[in-house]
Amino acid sequence: MRGTKPDYQIKIAKERIRILFSEADNAAKDDPELAKRYMKLAKRIGMRYNVRLGKLKRKFCKRCYSYFTAKNSQRRLKRGILIITCKECGHVQRYPYKGKKK
Image 1: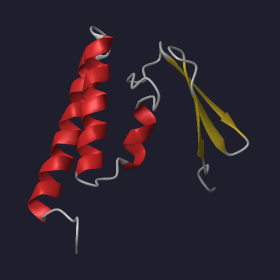
Image 2: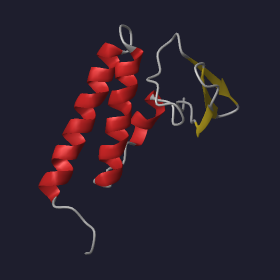
Image 3: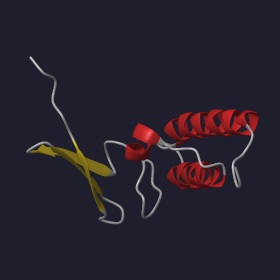
């Protein structure tokens, strides 16, 4: 197909994205700007190689790319919706949420 990347490149891209998220997690407390840079790089790698971030996209702000920690984000559950508010830029993200079935 046109525009598809080889499997080895997609595998390397997923590994790089995983590494960037772990590095952002380590750097978020000391240097938030470095964590933002890691998030921008992870997003660009995902777009270039058509790799979905999945649940990882809930860990950073889509507008300002700040890595979410307890200090710079607010998470709420409201009627089956997870609401994440970035305290740096004020952007609100909403995701559907299903609770555990009893």
